[in-house]
Image 1 (spheres, rainbow, N blue to C red):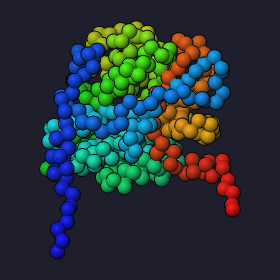
Image 2 (image 1 turned 90 degrees about the vertical axis):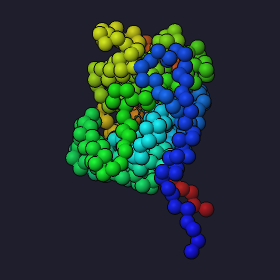
Image 3 (image 1 turned 180 degrees about the horizontal axis):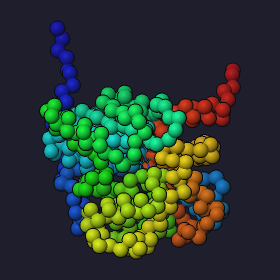
Length: 372
Ligand SMILES: Cc1ncc(COP(=O)(O)O)c(C=O)c1O
């Protein structure tokens, strides 16, 4: 009988370990706590910055877009940047299993599942439904990829608080009892090395001239980890940009606390930092939270379809679709909140969020097929 080349996960991880290399942080980030020891290259870096001809923008404003949707294929979006550190740490610690959590349509889960499989890990995803009535399991691009790559899914059938880690922690302990060595990917834990993915991204943007070329920088926020790294980068490099954090998950006060906690965790802020000073570092807005985490309105659907048709940029309905919509409204109604008129929108991705029933219906209505 012919010999088969069965995937031996341990062997794949052993090979992946050879790809680890010692991490050298940018000079401006050297003093931060929890600096990772190793990194592994998992994404396309130097993603382009392009002019973005968004509809309905006054002529006095110029909008640009940082294309983090181009970091990869099935791993596209900015989250892969943090996995370059998390998965390096998991390999270094000889873990065999990766656990992460998110909603059933989570970009984080999809990215972690694909990248972890590539490196030979077992994957367990703790999935939850956001609190909202009339929910059913959607067919969704991210969810489909999770299943295609064979991630073990653990779904809590009840709507769950977005910050509850109970099920994930129970899963961690039961996997340990079964003899696995799990690694949790989570930006909410103290000492998460993932933040350095965004530190490196900011360093990349400095080299692309971002701090010199733009007046304002717009970032879509969930946990706030990404923007925490950008606050450090901006501050330590002269504070030239006005940063705007557009929350899609929590109200202003909750997001502010989460960002401040991240900044204290890496010893950028002192433990007794007075929260009142924070507005000089960042402007936090929560207009994009409506109508609830992972939900969107017909106006968002219309906006996302219009932007796709006019500019070829595909926005995520749970994240960038809502924040870009808010940014456009702000430019139209309260332009003074911006420091200047040359804005950079950090496009965190990801296109798979559009692969669902709503956007399939919208796309079919938009362009009818001509028959030959
Ligand atoms: C497309 C997209 N944008 C933005 C974010 C928010 O990033 P952070 O949690 O670091 O604030 C996420 C998080 O899942 C995301 O998937």
